[in-house]
Image (cartoon, rainbow, N blue to C red; front, top):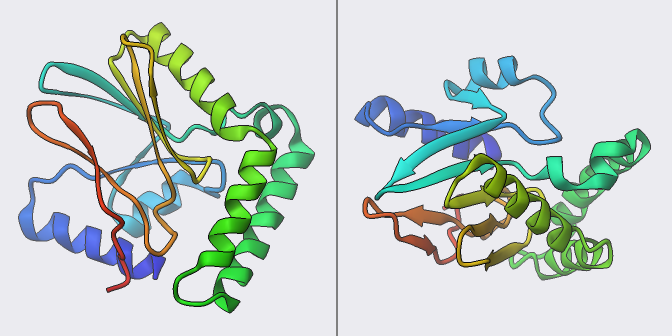
Length: 182
């Protein structure tokens, strides 16, 4: 399904020519150059853009997770856990209720979402941006401090997945769940 989604996005870019598609590298990407060649997207560590007068940054979020950033063993454990999770998803029903519950429990127990949100907000202040968008925690999360707004987009590989849409005037909408496999 992931390759089907990437193929769809690449076709969208080729068909319309104008949509800017940027892949923000995460903590599981083996090689940004390979992903760029395979997908046709620019692959970056962080992506700055402006919409409706709002300065924005999209960044994966693993940079703010001290367990993943500072502990090489935890990076390995996280990768293995990700592979186990993919296997559980294959066995789970179409609704993916068990696998999504399991993911929420693991992220909640480690307090990853709160930590990433705090780190991202501090980074946004440092970079002087109004909006910061992350992933990594695989949990939908929104917060603000009236100067900076933080959104975590959930996980694009989950079915169904949540998406964030930004209108031309800078309004951010958390979209209904989108089933990219249909």
